[in-house]
Image 1: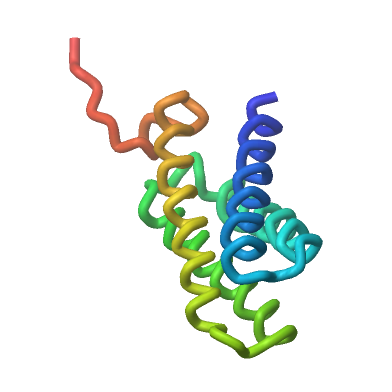
Image 2: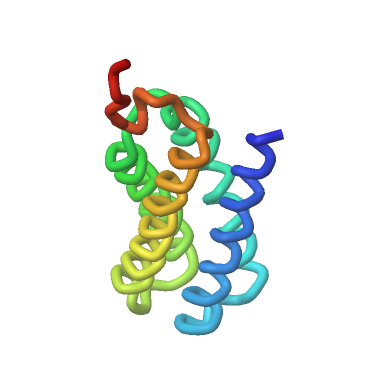
Length: 125
């Protein structure tokens, strides 16, 4: 059940951030912004969060998510328009990366990952 909550939070956040950044700021069509949020959340969850969340630390996982999102949004923007491509891609990617960074911290604090991945020193008895 925990995996469903984690994935649901990620999808909801990616869609909301996509709606705000892409639709409201950069005037990307609403369905495209929602679809990008869904697709990118699924890609980052499958390729980064599932295999690496329990064994790697937050900065590496966040960097991997950054690269995946940047590649995905750049591909989409290249196929649709070239107007402010770099600005749109970086603003969207940085926004999602900031979310992912704090999302991973929240997951670590709520024991969705191992103690080793959290890099938490436990007191010895």
